[in-house]
Length: 300
Length: 291
Image 1 (cartoon, rainbow over the protein chains, first blue to last red):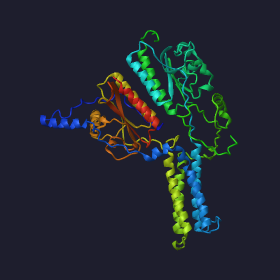
Image 2: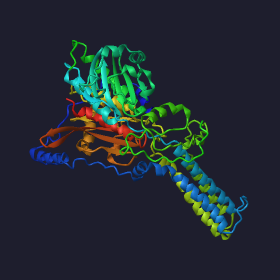
Image 3: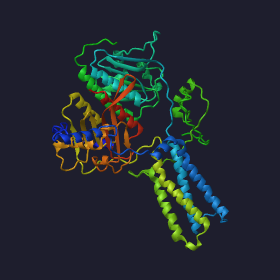
Image 4: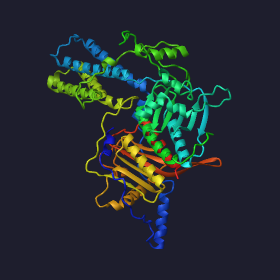
């Protein structure tokens, strides 16, 4: 990412101290202050924003909404022009022989070249069309289990992580395990076989010792299982709904792991993966800071 | 590779709302047959669809830095100018026949269409941004933050600006929460503003434009000459302003209090896709409920 290169140069961590903020109009005589106050209050009223408003981009909207039509449009345009060139030759009585000696033939050839370019572009666009994959609704029960005795800031951060991931990506289940304790189990989870309608609990110790998590924590890198049905390690994640399509395993430092289950095969894009990696680092920092002094708490 | 690529393919858009259990399309290549069989065993397919294998048409000239998706544009320019040359130089204007004029008109309109094709291709699904972001010259990087805020908010702001600069095509970021600022990246600051007055200068600019009162997301995918762009460095081509709202339920109404905004500038046009904007909105929500 080109934008990342600017972080190679030194950015000072300690920002310089700014001066105290001066209130507008504090040094003016009273009647100026009143008129100033009215103008500043009008700038804070509903018509407050005085900058430019963006125009609607009609072309971009139309192309995004009619993706299929636009992809085959160059083929039709090129095909029709091809036929028109031949038709023109026959209608005007010129023999359809391609020799470059007359200027008519030269223009014909150039137009044919353009038509062929359009047809090929249309075919290339059709070939690079991304396959649309259907969403598979996860089978399970909704649950929200948060480890008790967590400070409020940690709880709100965890809930923010869940909310952003479920709104932006195809994530449907989220489990956070830290320090051999299940901190969070939220979203859709597998129904337990006892028939009481509760979700399967996460056995944090067994999970952390399984080969899937050990491998991820040892390498320290995120692991993306794009099509979970192809992986035998699926048996180590019994708490996820059985038809979870994709899973991301994000290590949180060396002591924790976040398991994110999605409802579409290859549903997490590379941008999602990058964001999840950085959010995982932040979660690791937050949990490490706040969980050091907590005794082992009972899961609610 | 598949050899039965003879039949044409008809790929209707899968209507996800109407038939949610419609499985993925069955392809003829062997490598994905395992997952296709799994899908087929669960739900029977109604249509057999075959994909026309057109990937042989994709090619590259192998020259680094040359973007082949712009090839139709160059061909359009080249052939169009040859057509005009042929019209004036190829023969005398007295002997120009009607069929030739027709062909030239058709050729020129085809050339114009070819020139527009890369612009349309940018908005198709799955298109990747072609031009690279460049770091503007002559501007300095800055990183300033209000001092009188809690440590946890300082950490959050520093982390949020870092993640925005690193993960999106951003060169300048400004976050304002309840009047407290955090500014990072490349900005176009006039010479006379000293380092200690930077925050006050930014606050003045924000008040001048009235940015603290926006309620909707503003996205300018292409550069324009407006007052918003003066603060940003010269190479900025797209701008995104995302409000930070705190939603509070009081009685029957949902009140939305404006807490601040997040301003991002990028060196590329059309830099923020839908997904990028969704993530930036989620990041803005973090500060909506913050202490």
